[in-house]
Length: 194
Image (cartoon, rainbow, N blue to C red):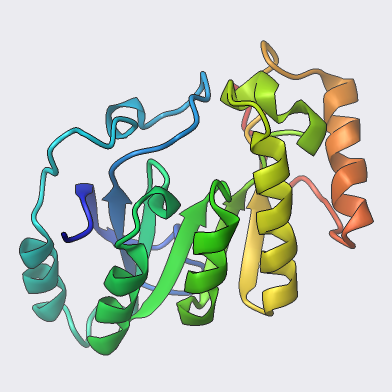
């Protein structure tokens, strides 16, 4: 079964640093963050809006124009077909990037060798994840995924959306402490508040 795609952005300069890219929005997510801006993508059972063959046809027509393809979502790691999709895109000559919240460390570990860049969404301090995701132990999975990413050598960016209805200033201090334990130097480049 091919990857289920809920949308496609044909051209972006901001979703894959330094690259002209297209974005594939993967269907499905196992978390339920209140501020999610892609709620329509959350149910994995929703029929795809674009077929995998249409994606391939689109990209073949843009070889030599686009540098890369971003797998975003929803949460791309929810679909077992992600690895095969990434390999297929790379065979077309494109660089690959992933936007993820690290919901599945096992799948992340499998795809990391085929990625050029990862945009990793950190929801909160790992002990506070359930406040945001409404899923028990989601912080444990995110922490495991972050460790894998940091050890992989793949270029990355960590980002956090701050919703003051869910987190407070002390929660952000805890988040910063969690990241510091892993050697991540945090700095605010853009404060995006809901």
